[in-house]
Image 1 (spheres, helix red, strand yellow):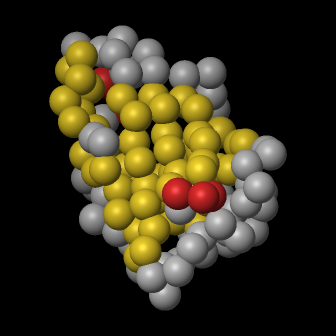
Image 2: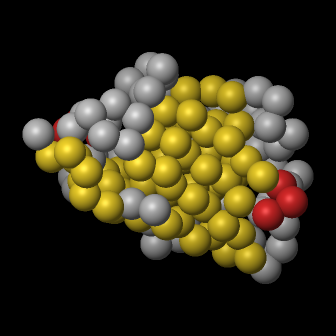
Image 3: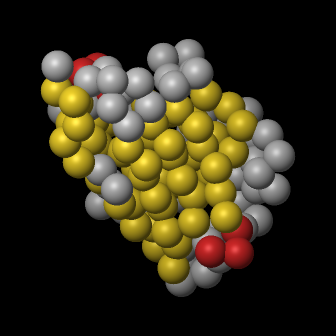
Length: 122
């Protein structure tokens, strides 16, 4: 089973940057399309960004397009989310998961990691 551990979150001022990491254990996720999701209290988890298993294609929600960059290093079994020009509305707990299929904005694995909190102050 794949176990996912998110890290890199923190408190940052609006306009700043953070780089999130998602590391897998148990088995490699190198063969999976991967995605980042985020959730705020009282709202459903939403798709943020996706990356093809090879890293050749990426997909972003309109709200983060142009500001966030998803990448992966399959040799390190890690997926990254570089977040720039952060806005207060980006404040959320960020999670990673495999994508059910390419083009899907739904998670594949029922089990989620602990997530990492990103707080953007104005």
